[in-house]
Length: 131
Image 1 (spheres, helix red, strand yellow):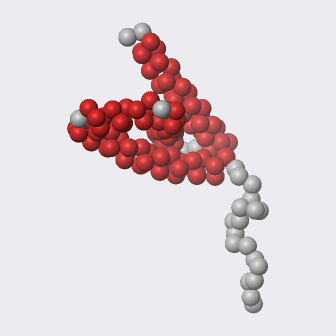
Image 2 (cartoon, rainbow, N blue to C red):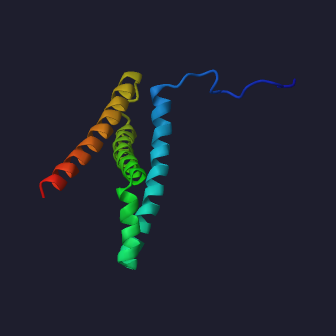
């Protein structure tokens, strides 16, 4: 019995993405983004300690389009990972394992993350405008 040319199961060409699998991958991805952001945060702290020239370089990066995109992604990653972590804690109590609740809480996590990210930036913008 040979298994030549048989795909491993589950295979990406066979199964279509479902909300649960996409959210699981996104949870892992946001965890990686938070780790990368923590490294950048440490670099920022080192730049603060190193003096005005080093800090100016970091400030220039965060003021650039790439830096702002990084901060936006890091903010979303924080809120998504937090909300999905709370969802997992709820699962640890043995609740919401049925398919309907899983999808409902999944969408709550997505919209909560987007909403908190938007709120953070709107609040920051108003604070900056009216200081």
